[in-house]
Image (cartoon, rainbow, N blue to C red):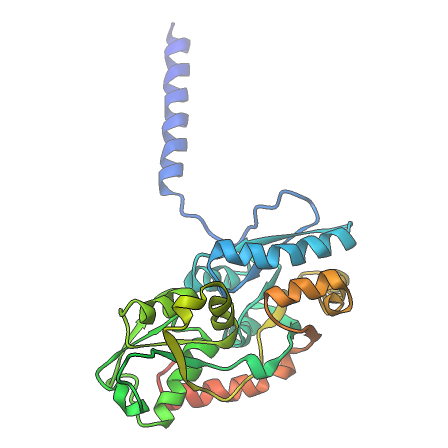
Length: 299
């Protein structure tokens, strides 16, 4: 009888301990939940909302998986910039496509550049206003609300803010900065009157214009910035170079087939191209200038 009582007490203690561990547990991103032995988790920064990101970039990974049967690439879409960056800097992603700012920061977390988006002339910021607004000059934005995807968006936030800075606007005091989470949200904020202007970059604006022409027709691109380097592809330091090379080969060959060209058109870009860390030195120079003159950032 005593043995039975002791057994039940021990079981209760074990169950209680297990439940307490479940309550206290906080998820981290250092260990990847892989379903296959040779699976590699791929992240793409929030160019679009998660559903659209999976629709556009999912086929590219399917394309690579069909041609590299010895490994499997799995795409994970982050809800917002904060989530993506948390996972990237924790080393959660094996491969990732960060923006150039995130790329430079990822160097110190063990990532290296192996490719990038082509069409660097497209990597620029644009500032949208409603056509029926009374905003004519940059100085007309003083006292107004400007929407951006996120503080860490380079083309869609930092570059427009630097443009405003060089045209007489102190972005820390002259305007109200609203960081709304995604490119689509930024566009919709000015469309719906929640902001007086919105910053984004040409690719999501072009997609929005094609899919919602009537709404897009209510807006105009009022100003645009000079271009900078486009988004990179990076690999974590422990990913075998042979795997990186295989994946890069598939990316760089997309513009050589009808199937691949169709995928690129949906991004929309003309190609991916080989790159290395050294290619992003101009981005480091820009970030240094921006941090010193506009607002301090971590990089």
